[in-house]
Length: 114
Image (cartoon, rainbow, N blue to C red; front, side, top):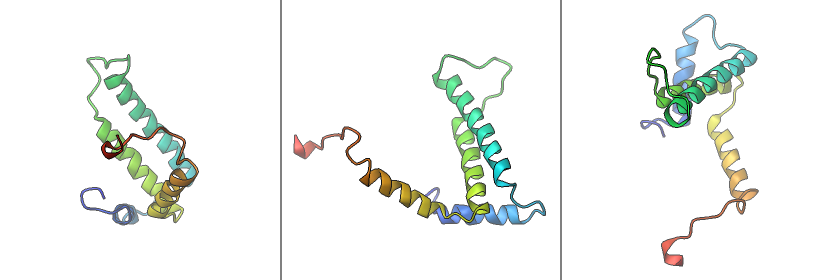
């Protein structure tokens, strides 16, 4: 949950917001382009804060949190426009990771196993 909101709540909130405009959702292809744009902005911020490329003094400060929020919004828009339940999509992926990839990574040993 995000601020007490489920993924379903987030999808509904975005749908209510988008539904007030005649234009509605952009096409899936346009939204993938927007995802690419937003991901680039996130990459730029991460590079400024953790990479080798500091910001110029003339550049405005944008938080990684803001860029992740922008990405989440566009992902929700894309899912809504395609009638995809993101909770179901998440559950599917977690099941895949917990079955197919269950032995892929080195697990942290629990204290009582030591």
